[in-house]
Amino acid sequence: MMQYRNLPPAPILTADTTVTVDGLILGKPENATQAKEMLRLLSGRTHQVLTAVGMILGERYESRLSSTQVTFASLNEKRINQYVASGEANDKAGAYGIQGRAGAFVVQLVGSYSGVMGLPLFETVELLNSFGITPP
Image (cartoon, rainbow, N blue to C red; front, side):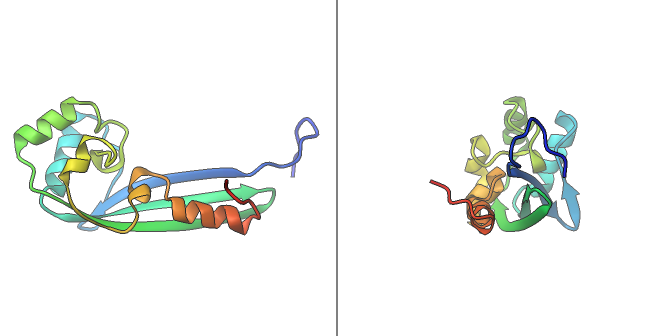
């Protein structure tokens, strides 16, 4: 392991989220057209949100996975267009951010709200604890 400036190793925490439906993986939309297609696909249906969180300290690496089932209401074209025009669909897995306007699309959530947001708190605290780090 390489050491810089004679500093002790520090933990690195990372996370990433994806949305799956019908065996398809929905990452981040490349443009508004793709965002609208994703939201149409999710409309009125249940999908799965998977967020992996990993931590490395020195040579040690561990990860955890959060899996959440999210059911959307049926979304008409006007609602989809307004949401995409808001800019919230940009840079979001599945073209939505539950912590914003899209929270109103959710009929049911089974699992981790913070996992859908992109950093599952339970799994993150588990990782920190496994490395001997106690969050405040």
